[in-house]
Image 1 (cartoon, chains in turn red, yellow):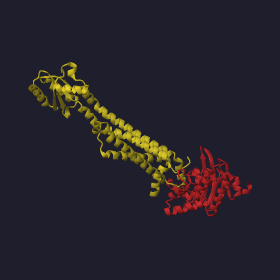
Image 2 (tube, each protein chain N blue to C red; image 1 turned 90 degrees about the horizontal axis):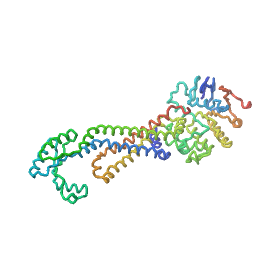
Image 3 (cartoon, rainbow over the protein chains, first blue to last red; image 1 turned 45 degrees about the horizontal axis):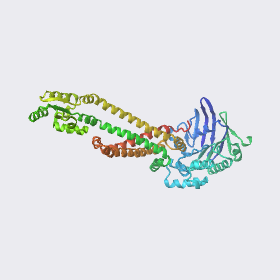
Image 4 (cartoon, each protein chain N blue to C red; image 1 turned 60 degrees about the vertical axis):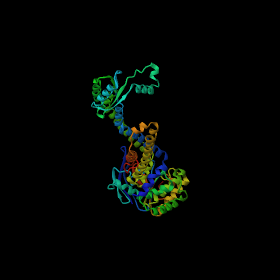
Length: 222
Length: 293
């Protein structure tokens, strides 16, 4: 599913990831923890090929970072769902159209689109808000729209970069429940976070980024 | 690529970003109005110069002592000169009437007599409406016995000869300047509108939209904006040149000739401006697949 070997990434000469190895199986739930600036987002960017490593190899959902052409990157991104701390919704269109966009890019049949959007919105509990604009929703609701958009194409991998970073504890808990539910259906989830409280409450495999290296961490050690 | 998606997205810009859409349409419309009125001037520049030349007429004043037969001989002599297209005799009485029309005073009342001489108006043939051509006619007319004086707008003709080419180049230069400014203005307005959507474009890339998938709705939007702006500009120009000019002066509307295809060209230029403006602007923002720079 995901395989990173001996990855090196640096910005302005400063190494951020240095000799990182990481692998993830289909259907796994993994927390990626570490302090701000540790390189969590950079590692996720490697996976959706928004960043090329200076050294090392990247394999994601059958795509090899070394051989994937620029024009094939959109096709990889359609196979993985991405969830951000700052949501990244299309603020010029309503909830329904935001989710629909992920289906338009995959050229999904019209008859299929409506059905899948309604399923995805029902999954995140927002069917009744399908005609609202993103600005009219709470932070937790906006994040749920992003999750609906990320899962509408039934991805095998979901990348979540601090998905609860901007949310209050109860909204964070809702998002966690949702991600767990998605995971139990077979979608692998890699979630970057520095909310250790959530990690403790919803246990799963944990990897930690520290000083450019990646370590497996046992929950009880924390 | 979904055609229905492109069509829907292309047109939904009008609903989603009303202000920037209206700004783009107005910019295209104003640019085309400038460009349109100036191109009318360019297209008619030659006839403007020509009409100024038409205004050049020559007048030969006759001595008071001439008998009607002598007048007739003088008239025929002038009419037979090369470069003379037409002559018209103006008697002393007719000259007084013209004077009254021009100055509103009856010269008989002011002076008790009519000092205005009879004259012969000379209309030059087309090839002689230059300073050299007019001078040759002038010299020949002066030689004719019975002519007291000959006048014509020598300085105007000399100026036209000297300046006509400069004038045409100047108009052409200003036209080029306006064209470039228009393209720049339109591209800039569209670029600002697309710049406002750069976050949306980034998000589209993250969701897996290909470059062409992002590009085509913007290009269609540009085309529609250009079409609307072009139609508005063509409509305004039509009203101005077909009706307003006629209303101001019939002479002006005769003078400015506009073929119907011209209005079609304005609309077409609007469409091209819209397409180019958005295609060029979007290219910068779509860039590569990299989202975070």
